[in-house]
Length: 132
Image 1 (cartoon, rainbow, N blue to C red):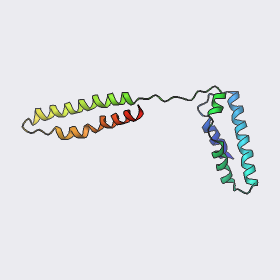
Image 2 (spheres, rainbow, N blue to C red):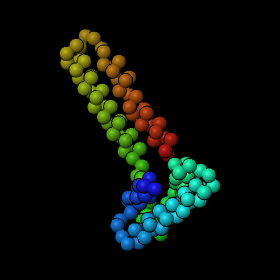
Image 3 (cartoon, rainbow, N blue to C red):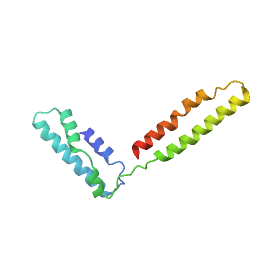
């Protein structure tokens, strides 16, 4: 049953320590252990019963709300990433142009690495469009 305790502790790791949290964890572990015992009485192996109990338990979003924890909202940085990739690509291409015309002005070769560098902002643009 150590696997159950580890799983529940992992689910509640981002919840601040409190007596309420510990009480909820103990209650959840007790309920899961009862479910495992019931499944074992029905003929399941212990490992299968533990895995089924964990899967059936599901998400703890409601329990976190009860404890006053808001789920973290991930900030969308795709627009910032797009701008960074455009400016970074322009700087890298400018470096290629400078090196090309300073060291080998009679051969125009900066165009070839430019195509490779332009993939970066292009992929960021499509990611930005997908998230928009």
